[in-house]
Image (cartoon, rainbow over all chains, first blue to last red):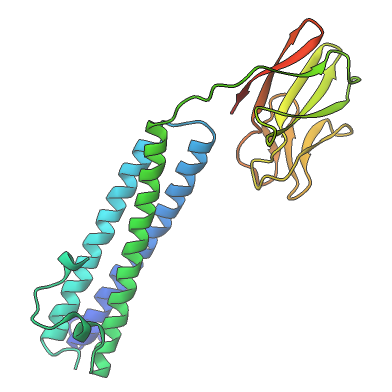
Length: 85
Length: 167
């Protein structure tokens, strides 16, 4: 049974990217829920939840951005080393 | 997001349209990741928009408008009126001899017009079976998640005056 150490480099890169993408999808689902909850709260006249919702959403966006940078770096490393050939 | 691009000497079109078949798997995944991050940015912008609207929110000033005569409708009867503008349809119910309640007629789910069910003593939305309490407009059942906006009514002489919308 292959482990992560004896996989070819291109497959290791793909596994890392797939993991990062899954995490981004989970964070996006949380952000969608957050947006709908903040909107619902705003429409019902409660304006106090807008600030924490915006801060939390910003943090989630920054995490997504960090994961994208990670994907980009893995992509550059694997393809740069000829692993994608 | 050009500032995120790695410092390669290859032009962007070469990175995005790879000649090698094996590289294609990386390009498609990277592009999908970029799209997901842009969606995340969209969600964040949406939250910022709500925050800006909350900060600059101003409480509305409502006109005082006569909507009915006292005793005009019987107990359990209903009168439709418009308040505060002629496009905001409302419903008034006489729940007791000297008790009147008024609500916006627009369901808080998808804006269908609610009606008064005398048999069940509640306001009902026929579109998706959302039911609201006659006492305070709270949701009793169904998809709406917010109560009906309440029209504050005041008796002055022989007239019922609408003075404010709450909620």
